[in-house]
Length: 316
Length: 300
Image (cartoon, rainbow over all chains, first blue to last red; front, side, top):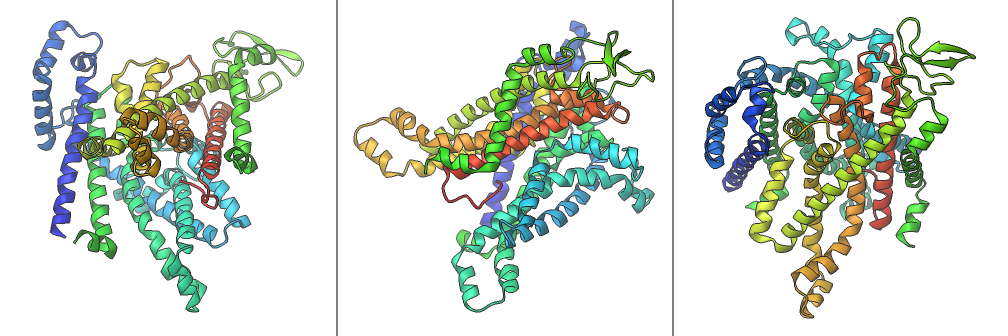
């Protein structure tokens, strides 16, 4: 157990350093002068030289990368080029809003996706199964930002059921908070609900073919017991892995959803940062998302280890 | 039954394929289609022109300053500066299809190269490449694309192609590596080796041909993702830049006025949706046709 955890932790550190290296290469080692980008289009050569010196860009690349790593580890992620605020603090302020968005979306997509997948798997080829699969196909193929715009137009603008974008803190009332988030939640959830319905269905059908399921039926067990205890429980395991990863990957989807609905979360931050060419902020959001994903990955693996006795036996 | 016939029996996949084929024909023939049938080229600003609307000449922007909706002269309406949405959609198809096809090809090449090296040579090469792939995959695709877009020169179609290729090859590399790991243990590879074939012959003659199937399937599915990614980048303003029409930047341009001119936003979205659905259907159909025994499974 301890050796497994230790190995996983070491792996995590390796991946984190590599993520930092990729980010570093993108922002500092690409052809073109980052100092020029940071100083702006109309900067004088003196300003550029000053920026170069301040960022240590006159040093050789490996030394720059070392400094970059140390700064990243100490939480010194630089200052926004636009607001002059520290990048990490800005990201941490935006984080709860993205979490609010993610949380509701996860609940909705699990409640939609998994039951739909189970019902489909119970009667493959039925009308229900076919229509679910068509619906999920649309869900995974539609551009999320466009779905958001259509929702805004129909349910907020036309019907007036929901506010037109904007965001309310949870502290200002739970109802107002949820009311503002319903459309973004559904927008984000639709895509994943499609994937989860398909995954659940495929997993259940795969497992239903296995010998132990036949044995369970042969023992005379009720179909409900076999499906509930033997098939569904095992089909759930890969979904746990998927969920851990997807929650982390939501940062990607959040960029689009947050920019459409005007939610000031990390995605919205990244969007504004790109428009303003605020490189330290773009870099910060990329690093933060990657950090979050690596940690989520670790938690999922450890959870898996605790949940699945087979892995424990393999590693001991 | 051959793979082609299995594919042809899959009605959904075939429908998707026919749609894509038509789309490609229309996109390639865009100047003809738009010039002969439709009102205007996507680049021409029509704000000063009058068009025939119900038998009389009217301005392209109505009295209230609102763009003209779907009508006889503008089948899918006109945009905020009086350009025909349908002709821009058709020209946009050229850009979107070209960019995502080239981006996918680049991703397939990179994925094939890295996957082959990692799977064939194993050991240290594999460890380094696989850890690198892991690290790349720890950054959400859209954020990685945005990061690249913010440092690469903007406004260039090939920049977008490069970005799509650079962010999408990782999972193809994983798939290729997995396939190669099992293929390299097969008897025909051993036989080739016994006959004196060197590594490059084994790679090129024996392994790559066996990877065509998986690459075709996952390349198609990854192209579906690339259409979405290109449109998202253009929507965010870091992909294809105006005045070149792309489905994504058309939606972005229409966004500010979507409550009065919904058609500017709605139709490009439908175009994206139909194209991506078709690619997913074709991808699933190819998988079922090329990987026997997977018929009952839908989805990734």
